[in-house]
Image 1 (spheres, rainbow, N blue to C red):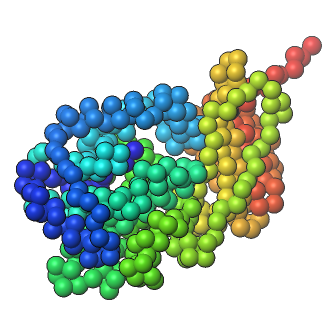
Image 2 (image 1 turned 180 degrees about the vertical axis):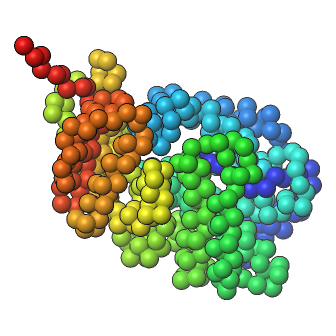
Image 3 (image 1 turned 60 degrees about the vertical axis):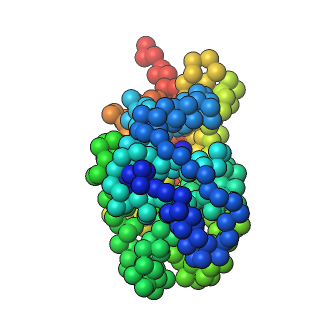
Length: 399
């Protein structure tokens, strides 16, 4: 689901002429001629909430929501009482001022708000519409092979639309964003502070807030670098050759160098019989940076996470008692980078649990028990791995 972080919009002020004029301006900036007129409609906030609830029911299976929620809780990104589906709907209802429906191929504008802000918001959404006519954004976002690569594709879409919106404003002042890099950084920082304007977003866990803001702030920087390097051709390149990881978004040089994540095998359970896969994916550089920041390493989080080379994570479930177990493994540039992550992982475990008992603590191994069962964390060369939530080890009876 998309969160549209933007100012509110007075849709009654939008006229076909204004939309056509904005599409023409977008065509000049991007070099993309519109292939058809953009259809649009209006709705109020009550209708929006009903629309979002229906969307969730139509497109996301209950077991998929459950799996995602379990994974977020096991990783420590959200508290145990967190309701993912309800929170996302509330966030979108609170935030959205306008949105483009990729399936219906239609722009929806919300009633009420500040008429003075309408042109910027509509311009952002029309950028999606114009890109959709050439690259089918519904298929584009679904082709992400993991949560991390999907986040990168979202940053392409939202970052480019934000860049084009800002470029339109700059051109009206006789300037261009290509000549104003400080304006890009300033806008990105303002997006980062957007949570304070919205109560639901402000109350959301750090990971949820950061995930929703990332495509706009980091995507803006990424698209700016592509446009500066490749000019108008860069608008199409990011769709034809999309970034494959959040790392490529955060470090555009990695995108240009085609630095790709490596595959990392998950740790094995002592006995793999009787378990089923709930969900699996990749924790990217972005995920690691937020996890480290959330559990006490804010000043070091980005520095440590920048040496990420690849990772895997999965939640499996015992078929009999439904016990969920987290499997995690990550690969780092050097053994020293891996050691830093291994040491940091201690703090992550301690922070996400109410109680933690350590049984074994060596430079390469950490075992014990936490709120949801036994854990085993290990460091092997450049790899950090963990199994969390195992059934408690039986204590031998003393005669």
